[in-house]
Length: 449
Image (cartoon, rainbow, N blue to C red; front, side, top):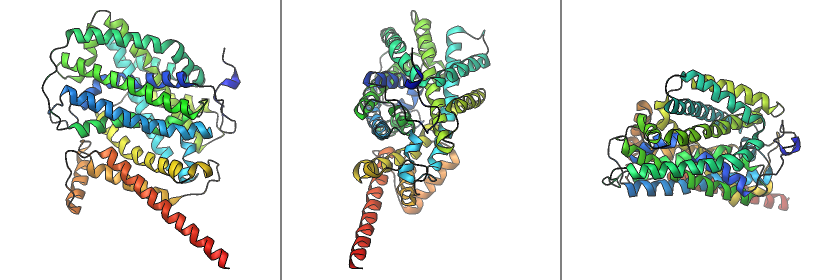
């Protein structure tokens, strides 16, 4: 039985226990990498531009591998400072932006997590209906999934250990069974092109990078930063690639119809049983979203009991899920990538390359660092100038006009996530250089005086 000392503290005033090893982290992130949304979302991988021009199987699989590796390395590196400092993700950003300015990404992350949490409850309810039929109303499944989610967040480290000991093995068996059954029935997967390879990689990076702003929430309990990094990269990459490839095979069976993709899983021998395992496992996704929302709220109100936040967020997420618009899923991922990829670049450069690790201030008195907003914003701009992924008509039109205004022509080989990362990283290095030069000049002036 898990003792109170082995659980997450109720407030930020208490030190976090360091109890999670590499297997705990790996199993947790592997379970997060297997998402029912990934099966139907494989259509965005095959046709990221939404114009019916499908990638070839080889191009799609390579895009899944490349995008997953890039994205999970980002998540893994974002986890390292959390493991070293013991601070949750949004509290960690006090060292980057200052305590007050960290509220900006905190609010954005809360919005993101609420959206993801609603999607996951919708997925669980819809997946359950695919297995059991329409005899139980959608709303009942959402309410049940919401209650289970809140229960898991009360003892989060216990939930992670539960995943490692029992759920991971069941998920592996289910995935292997479904993979063999689907591959036996799948038609030829020939045809397609490489034309949309870069946007496809962007999509997969966005799937992974959505976890960047929450990675430290779990890494803070790691026994070492190596355990946190290895668990993220290994567990999530393998699981996400397997999930996307299975989604491609299932789509081939239902004619690239994402609304019927789960039917392909249920239709195979014992498919309902093993798909039901994956539906139940989806609760770890909603758990992670609700729990990390609570952790984000504690950056704003550090002395409020996390259980109060978890219960409130769970109720709100459940309410949103009852009316969720899942058609905005692709656009939602694009926005996530545009916001958090450049922020991650600023964090990595400042923490690992500019000596931030030695001076990282996560206290409530951490001074504002306005200069760090500049590379973040410029990276955000770079993302939208380069991306070819359609989102909302008026937003896409505005950026099309911006390209025309500056005479920028987007090329098919360009990758928006990498462009945003490179721009933010280079500008952060420039800000650090200017800051250092200013400090050196001040030191010389003081010496002369």
